[in-house]
Image (cartoon, rainbow, N blue to C red; front, top):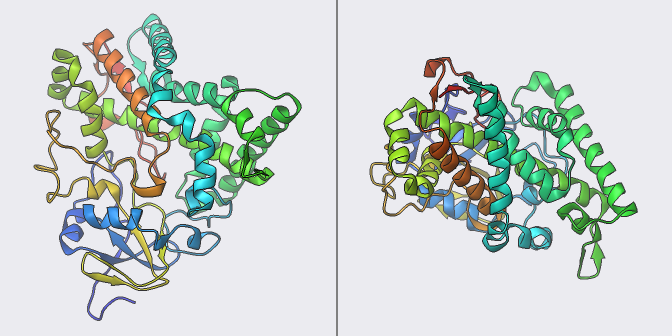
Length: 399
């Protein structure tokens, strides 16, 4: 329980507007760990300071597995009912993660560079041939990561519209859509189950085929583990990268000075991806809860055994104690230890692939379309509403 006199704030703090981080985060960050009332599951601690967030993410006394199947504080209407790598603690988490870790190492991902570049060029060739203006989200930022993860897993690219629609619904924060959310979850799991059955009948050497054949210390993955692991890789492999690539381009075109800085010096693109990852909050609110398995002090607060903590990495990445001028975008920032890809055992497995895709995508846009600009006023760009992840619904551009 919270100490007497502590204010319990309603969370999220306000409506999400484009890529803006609610100013309330700066207020609560100065206060340290605070108590908030979540839309579902009651009260929790909210961590927004950089060091506090890193501690909660890395300290194994904060458990994700303890939240599974429970009505814990959360922003999403549904309770986690499918055990995935995202809701596991070591050693179970480690067992699953090492099955695919080699596919996402920086060395292995670098081998994908020529193919990713070819996909980017093909998409831009088609968009340019179709003429200006165009919807960059539909023509480029969404198809790119979908094609890449489909080829890596061995999923038919022709089915991308289906699982893109299912993924969008699964990440809904609207409790009036519970029936549709459940149906989307069933559809995507059924889809992966059919692909897995095909791999068993006709083995392949793609990532999904490798998972079907995988054994860990003599134990084959269970059918449900295979299905949920496949779903997780498919969803995580395109949803975040697609949204952030569109978000980054929108922000650059909304502030043309930044865009022209990259056009004038394309060598800045790698640093720009890191700075934009720090600056742009991907999540519309805090992430998944973690349960303290014993009393733990966090930033001067005592989190008691059984209490939950939610972290907001976007707010942590604006912590002035770590980042000089945190609310400014600076491509020349000398040190940038952002945690946009997480921290600890749940650090994003696909971070090297996401970085490669975003670096090549932005670098190619800067090189091939230096005159790129928004085709509508920035305030008229539409955003996906009531979703866990921020992203443009459409990004009209001209060149």
